[in-house]
Picture 1 (cartoon, rainbow, N blue to C red):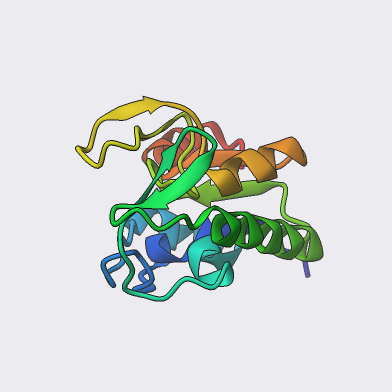
Picture 2 (cartoon, rainbow, N blue to C red):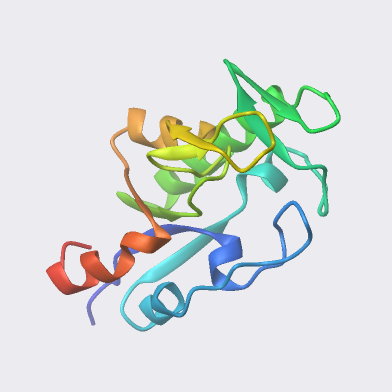
Amino acid sequence: MSIRKPILVSACLLGEPCRYDGTSKPVDAVRALQSKYTLIPVCPEVLGGLPTPRTPSEIVGDRVMMRDGHDVTENYRRGAEEALRIAKEHGCTIAILKEKSPSCGSGLVYDGSFTKALIAGDGITTACLKAHGIRVIGESEINDFILSKSL
């Protein structure tokens, strides 16, 4: 019996309604990985103590701010640390995370203006995971990685 490789995954990509608006963003290609890998779902925002639903947040400078001006940076940092702890506990070396999110975005995140404008950068959890050697893949990249068999 072979042990299936564990992959950390944004819970919303698996259908968990934990996004800021109380919905999910299930991705069939991600869900299909369950047949070959052990998927470890996380929602860093919830792990950091934020409710669902919640006011939208974006990275503004070195802080994470809700649209109403409430600073939730510490919630995001706590969630990132908890996601990292879970990844290490399960031996994850890869994470598939929700793109553009102030927590899980990889390569592009919203710019803090709440106008859907994007800038180069990583979310708080993505940066934390990468700093500890965990490879982060956005959901739009999943098919390329499946085809290249690099998971």
